[in-house]
Amino acid sequence: MNSVPSDKRQPGFTLVELLVSLGIFLLVIGAAFTLLGSSQNRYQTESQVLTSFQEARLGLDQIVRDVNDAGYPPPSYVSTNFNLFTITPFAWSPGYAGNNPCVIGTLGGGTCATPGDFDLIIETNPNPQDPACAPSCQVQWIRYKLETPPTVPVPTLMRGVVLKQFNADPAAAFAGANAPAPFVQNVVNSPAQPIFSYTCDTSTAPQLPPLPCAPLGDPNTAAAVDNSPANIRDVIINLIVATPQRDATTGRPRIVELRGRGRRINPNF
Image (cartoon, rainbow, N blue to C red):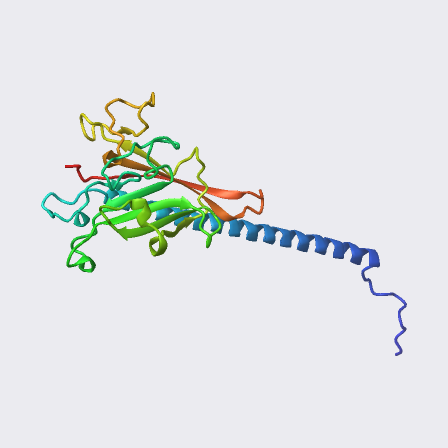
């Protein structure tokens, strides 16, 4: 029996249907890639924020530890060598070599260049139990200073450590090979947002309570406050750090702001 060929054609897609399907496919792929790119940009931005936060947190913790260690050694430690024990919790400039304390100010006030809003020198003893400091544990100066170094062309909080030189200007000791090294980068504190501010003990009742250190003659300064660097009780740290790159969405850097307080616990005498 012979089969009769059929003239019925198999159904298929028309050119219009193919073009519509291709258009929909391209729209879906485009949306997927746009979402993927946005997610990658967001991930990079959040990673930068996290990195900046971690760097700022480590920096803040180190400053607080150094401030907490500032000041005098235990009363049982006695020496005639001024380089082997601290005579003040914070070194100052100018006037340290002549033992003539300057006046601490706020927002650029006062007569001290150091300590200031962006510059702090801590005088502290190494751990006497540390074998590295045997046979004598000479006092160290630790300096934090905001500047823009040539090697890191962004505002950077620098940190340096030198051995104390009793008859020298502490600020001058951090030069040449002793210059501070980059510590926290992209610090964006403004003159109205200082990194360091201070409270001072009152002259009538030390530590009860410490009051903001401010220049003499400031109407907000209590008459009982001794505004010399030797009388600093608390160092309030306000560290504002920006991400290295701008946010892909807003086009502006993301900001991380951390606050902390260091309190020296060693008595003046």
